[in-house]
Amino acid sequence: MTQDERTVLRVVALFLLAQFSLVYCDGSRLHPLSEPAAAKSGVKPPDQSTAAKAPASTPAPAPQVHYGTDGLPPPVEEMREAILSAVRSGRIEDLLHAWDLNELKPDLGVATSDPIAHWKQISGDGEGREILAALAQILDAGYVVLPLARLTPAQEVELLRLVSPAALKEMRSAGTYTHWRIVIGADGTWHAFRKGS
Image: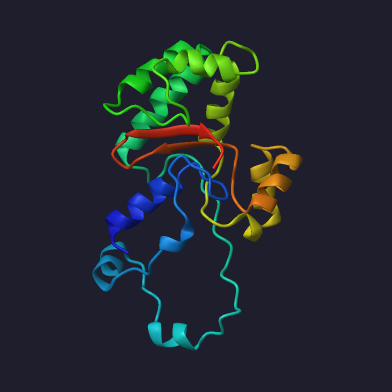
């Protein structure tokens, strides 16, 4: 995997916990580092001869949960900060600044020309503060990419910071994360913010 691919994967994995988004990716697209990328990054690629001999039933080690913005491209950090600025203000209308930074508007899961009215309508408090709280939870949560079935106990606790135990049970049945997700590309484009898969 090249440095660019790893950067994109980090962005893709940002604010994910068990396949949720800041940037969404299913872990099946992960590839070993190529020789040039490995040399540049200082990471040794896996030895293909021994990898082929390893039994298929050997479980991979649990991925580390990452926090904060280390390793994120600057455009992603800027968009994250624009969104968090609205969260800190407590005013859903302030989210328009981040919304307006995009030429193509983020996917909200419904067609709307007025995102503020939409967020107020679906927010339990009618003012959009529940939406801002969901954004804060997502953007402050740790992130990893792995199937729900492979969560370690510590990772499950991290997920339970975002969803109720009943919601987690439903997600396990569905085989996918179905709560709030946000998608921000490596170039800082806010692609989506929606609830559901």
